[in-house]
Amino acid sequence: MQDLTAKKDALIATAKRCFDLRLQTNAGGNLSVRLESADAIVIKPSGIGFNECTRDNLQVVHLDGTIEPSDHKPSKDLGFHLDLYRIRADIKAVVHCHSPWATGYASAGVEIPCLTVQTIEKIGRMPLIPLSPQGGPQTEIEISPVFEDPKVVAAVLANHGTIGVGSSLMKAQYLAEIIEETAHIAFVRDAVMAAHGKKVADLPRFGTAADADASAPD
Ligand SMILES: [Zn+2]
Image 1 (tube, rainbow, N blue to C red):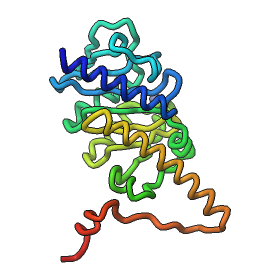
Image 2 (spheres, rainbow, N blue to C red):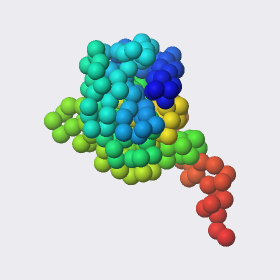
Image 3 (tube, rainbow, N blue to C red):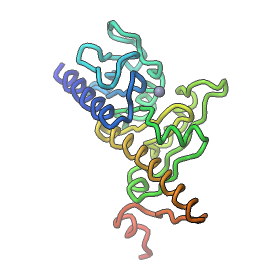
């Protein structure tokens, strides 16, 4: 019970931070966290905004899909949240939001370049997942295969939003922030390059001094 209350409070705080940063307004997006028991999660229900999450409206859902009694409808994206926890034991939290810079890139069908040293270090690769073959929102069918690679911690959904996963809610939230920050920086870079007639820009090959040492010849 103590774990459940602590996880609900952490989710409420993370959702508020995401809302305050305007990464997710209205009642879209969703976020979840795995309970210590590992076989159930706490998730924001459908129709509740990131700024309106409370201990009473958050839902507890078991990994087999069983939802504890709730007055609310489950999130439309519950399926991919559950599947990510099933396929990756290291995933303890998922933040999915419709942040505008990143979603703009994804909707243009352009993968956000990992152009800062921090993005290289913290993310490495941000796969772009297209709409479902029927033209609808991405589900676990499109999303899970991308995250089967244990190195993937972030992805961007065309015409939809972003996904960050991590060993805690704060780590997943940081990724949501880095994805959005990177898309914003990429937009500025591309606009400045176009204004100055530049066609080629450098990209970092590693993110930290330790990475550089690791790639140095003996
Ligand atoms: Zn969504």
